[in-house]
Amino acid sequence: MSLLNQHFEQRSNCLGFRFEKQKPRHDDFFRNFQYESMTKEDEHKAKENDALLIEAMNGLTFEERQEQQEIVHGVDDMDADESTFIDSALQDLDRILLGTKKGTVYETAEALNPEYVNARAFRIMFLRGNRYDAKASAKQMLSFFEWKKQLFGEEKLVKDITMDDLDEDDRACLRTGCMQIPGKDRSNRIIILLLPGMRCFKTLMNELRTRYYIWMTVLKSEECQRRGAVVLQYAVGDFRDKKQGDGYMETFILTSALPLHQAAIHLFTDNSTEYILGNGAIRIMPRKIRARFRLHFGSHMECQYLLSTYGIAAWILPLKPITFEMNLEQHHRWFQSCLITDTSDCSDLVRTQTINIECNNNDVLYVAGKKSPNAGNDRLRVLVTDLSQIYDSGTKEKKRMVVDGMIGEIQKTGGRFLKRHPESQSDWIEIPLDEVRLKITQMFRNHRRRADALIQGGRLITGEPLSNDVVFGKTHRSRGSDLMHHLIKERSDEYNTLDRGMKVQVVDGLIQRIRDEGGRFLQPAPEHGGWLEVTNEMARVRISKYFRNNRRHTKKS
Picture 1 (cartoon, rainbow, N blue to C red):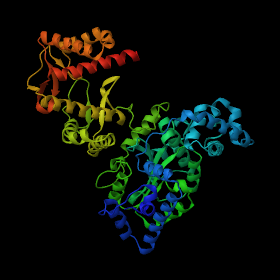
Picture 2 (picture 1 turned 180 degrees about the horizontal axis):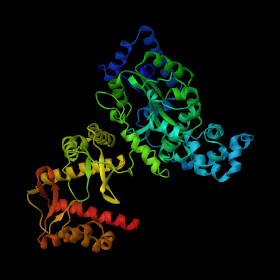
Picture 3 (picture 1 turned 60 degrees about the horizontal axis):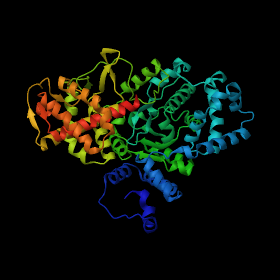
Picture 4 (picture 1 turned 120 degrees about the vertical axis):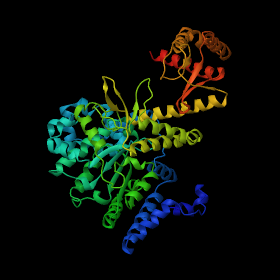
């Protein structure tokens, strides 16, 4: 049982919790390991950290403790609808600013461009960052403009900062990778990775402007504003700070002025001195921030394990296997994409890249209408087959973890998920991870349909389909498939007005028409080296779905 739950155990009856003695878990092993690798004095400090965290949690209400635990571990639900209280919060914010802005840089910015400063979306961003606390939001807005003037000058107070506003030294600092956006956790929150050992700048102002740029870039996402970001400070091995903490206080104050809610903060170190410094930082934190802070001690492997317990896949860290050197390829692609266009949301590293990529054998290639023989594609198909039972029987969260694990397996081998550039069929571009997840999910559905077809007596057919056959899926076009889609469009309006029993008759009539033309209904079965002829019952299910999809597309248009 973790230390966090010791206090809860004492009050288990009144809180409704029930704790029983269990066998030692993996996280207990690593906690014991970290204590064994410290001196007695350091071990005492480490236990003090746990005590401070317990104190912070005990200072919260039961509901707040529940919420903080779920947030930190990446299993919280999406925020409630803010529309019920946002107008009231905005009125409170306006009232507080009216009484506090006199003589501030905020007032200067408002005089320069009131539309920018008073924009509803801009003000809501600060409310979201402060969990709709109008007083804290007003204070932060005043500090925000003070810092913006100090970093970029008065002439840029009322404009969004882009790459064009960073000088060469700022860009060099950004390109080092000391601050990165490697992806998202299982709760779909953006992760910001800080690597103290890679800090490199000409002056501290370069690093501060870089941090401002990255923080405000991720805030372009409304989801990030609502849900916050997860901050990882990774100071293990060669990534320990070589600048002896130079500029940390200025960085902390700047970060406090930016409206990004830090949903969880993790500090990883393998150095006992830094662990003790972390202990000091915990002591001065406000209680609610302390409840979101986690301090971890261990090697690269131990820290990667600990990450997984907080809903963050180990492969999120862009470390090379065995050597644990930093792989900056993904970060440099993000940097290049921001240089090319700063008007799009560059906060999500996994969005489509606009630069040409040279594919390798480990990549998963998506080519419309064709099955790729690339080794990466074969590896992904094997994973789908091997994990299909686990996926099909899992909860929504479990399914997402399976898919993310598969993505990680491909990326561990140096593979990426690529598709043809829409404007140049000779170039490849990287697919956003959200789109990759959808594609893998569809692969699992297709695998399940083929399995169902076999169970229901589907017949395996080798060789190529006949011209009048209907082949379900996007990988094969035929005269039979074209006829089916023509008939669906032709009878769609009629179908949508009928009750369920009459709809079945329409679908059965369509199936019979295909049969009369000499066609069969086939499902690709690449793992069997052929095609599955599905039964009329399976064909009925698929065609009914086509009718529903056609109705949705008609409504959208």
